[in-house]
Length: 295
Image 1 (spheres, rainbow, N blue to C red):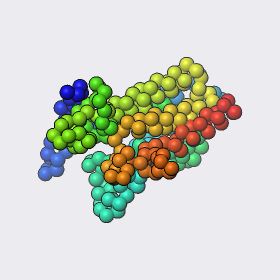
Image 2: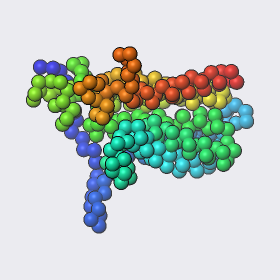
Image 3: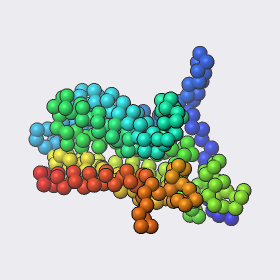
């Protein structure tokens, strides 16, 4: 019998109640967003309060301006993340039922869409306040990884976004469809890669450790664009790599496309996650080159 880890029986809802006929629930995924944003905000404020970390003319904004920016970042994450999921992954479904776009409590958020939402929000605030855009991007990049780490852990608790089938001993027997539909004989449960945990470690913990070390120990904030470039490049590479082990979205899988490739040329192809990660990698490399030239 194949060795595997049984999925822990953890409810996606922390607490739930009914108030005036409406069901209210606090879910792990929502809590991950809230706590991740708060930790990231405090980390950015801690960096802003240390002028020695920044080169001339100093930190790109005051802690008070950071608080104002936080409101716009939250809006950018929610609106961008939802619209990104709608446009990148299920445009046909939501075009047929446009009212479902507003039902964010049913799930469906895309990091790349949330990233674009945050970029737009930051650009608008930087323009209004006259802030240095590259240094602002560096500061904000320091605060992204806690949300990524906690968000991927919440994905695991929810039993969603699981990986491809595996016979490795740390494969997890996820419940429901994931266990019964992976090419095994009928009725036999299979294990899958816990790709959510891979992403939590790579996109969250590892990138966070690298950025903090660069900012506090290597003076990277004194070269505008270096921290942001490192984040974009490392996140893109991490997501690109994990996509090889992650189960593709159902709408891309078919009998003629079992790997769920979004584009395919000459026998080689990319998943949607990989396709969306390539511009991040290229942009990160460009920022690092610019920081090196002007540093």
